[in-house]
Image (cartoon, rainbow, N blue to C red; front, side, top):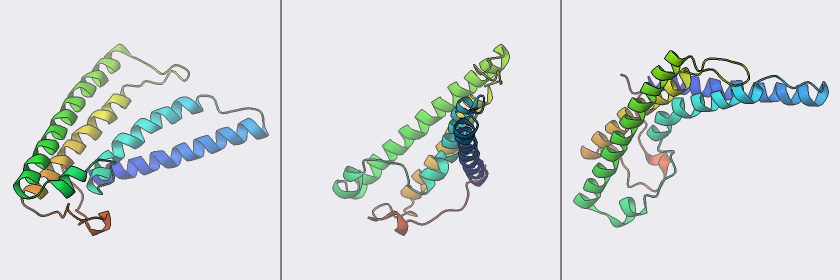
Length: 169
């Protein structure tokens, strides 16, 4: 599932790039920008971020403050701190997933549409919900890796981390 979402995220970035390029060319060459380009770009940003968030976690690409975890905490205290952090992150992301799924259902039933193009927008909170639940699963896998010492988090570079296979749900 992570691999498919990562592909969708990459495709979304490509579509944003093409859309913005055509919008700029239309604006500068023909004095006629693409109608709704900004609105579509904003929608694609949601898709890009939430489809790629679990992959970024898998690749240890999120910005974070890990000075205490990697340099100060050692042994059992480090494991306890990581467990608390990862379990809290799982819980928060499950809450985000639940409430955004509820928002997607409400938005669908109310027929909420975008401002300029009048496109339905119920799929945006759905992407947030799906991305958050997959991130929760990835964080849980990271916790299991830490618990059973299958991942080397003490490494100074992310290049030394083991790359895991796609998370299948």
